[in-house]
Amino acid sequence: MFTLDRTTPPETVLERLQYPFSVMEVGDSLHIQDFRKAESARVSAIQYIKRHQLDWKFSMKKCRDGWRIFRIR
Image 1 (tube, rainbow, N blue to C red):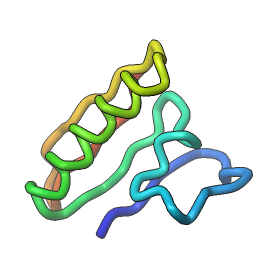
Image 2: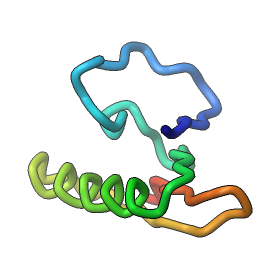
Image 3: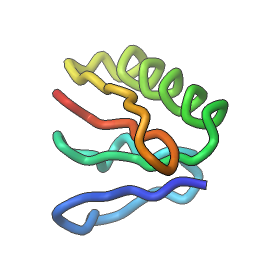
């Protein structure tokens, strides 16, 4: 469904979460091949930020083999 690219391995990832936003650092990205799922992940990221009152920002970009959602702040 998607892959998380990061420079350092996560300490723990809770299995019940659909997307690993809590362990993402600035510069990390999710790769999702299907546009509808990528759009769903983007909306989930916005909801995660609002729910946890964070000063984070995510960006969604088209790439050759799908979509990437980057944590940019």
